[in-house]
Amino acid sequence: MMRRTVIVLAIALVSACGVRPEPAQAAYETQATAAYLYDVTTDTILVEKNADDPLPPASMSKLMTLYMLFEALRDGRVTLDTTFSVSTKARQMGGSTMFLDETDRPTVESLIKGIVVQSGNDACIVVAEGLAGTEDAFARQMNARAPEIGLTNSTFANASGWPNPNHRMSVRDLGVLAARIITEFPEYYGYFALEEYDFDGRSPSNRFNRNPVLGLGLGADGLKTGHTEEAGYGLVGSALQGDRRIVFVFTGLQSQPERRQEAEAMINWGFRQFISKSVAKAGDVLTEIPVWMGDHQQLNAVARSDIELLVPAVSQDSVETRVEYRSPLEAPLAAGAPVADLVVNAGDMPEKRIPLVS
Image (cartoon, rainbow, N blue to C red):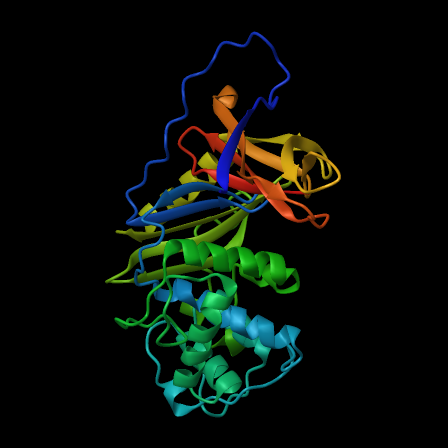
């Protein structure tokens, strides 16, 4: 019978000795309906509030339209200079627009800028029709692609985030999507830091990026705001300070000033309340596991890659680590096969599990 074995590890995370324990770190508090904060560099979730609830995402779901467009660029189906036609449906679209009309042939690059900076609903329809023929067909493609890239609580009814009861995303899914855009498409991520864009001089009143934390010296460089009466004010954002990058998502606030204050608070909290500590280098042995029917009675469980942990700055000694594995293990086991999990608990942070290999 297989049984789970737990080994408690004493892993040194601090070099100082005799330091008086600090009070436990307070959990992040927010008035947002849902919130999610993720450290991309260490793959650590820092905040979760109603993170898996499917909610109206408003224009934040335009990130999925852009992701599909970035995939088309990567696959060579289009280039930045490819031009798309503008349908009457796109021209008649309400809300935030680039003010496109049927005589235009906008390039893919101009549409990316129009979606990121101007939140162009018309641009989203142009992209959808250009890639899939119709917006409905594009929505079906997004729904098919979503679970393949880890979006488990998202359904899409259109390309723009226009209110629809069948158009929903969770803040976790938005965070996962943002992290994918950042890591998979670094060559296009710079568009999200643009503070101003005006297509052909047509929209002087809608040329500024609505992201309230760009240019504030906080390291913010993306991604997308959202607002409808149903959704409230929200933001999918990212910031880079030093070698650490965070992604933050929230929705359901009541005003633009609240959105700006929340974004600043999440950035400051994410960077100031945590520090990164090295636990192990790739190949380091963390424990030995009994093995049956092999040439050796013990098997080394090693770190597959360098392990960096993000720990609360005020209570570094509150981190608890343990190794869990199913025993007995039976030989033969291929080198690099998953054999155990390093489980990390640090204060109120969500539990983190890191695979160890043979």
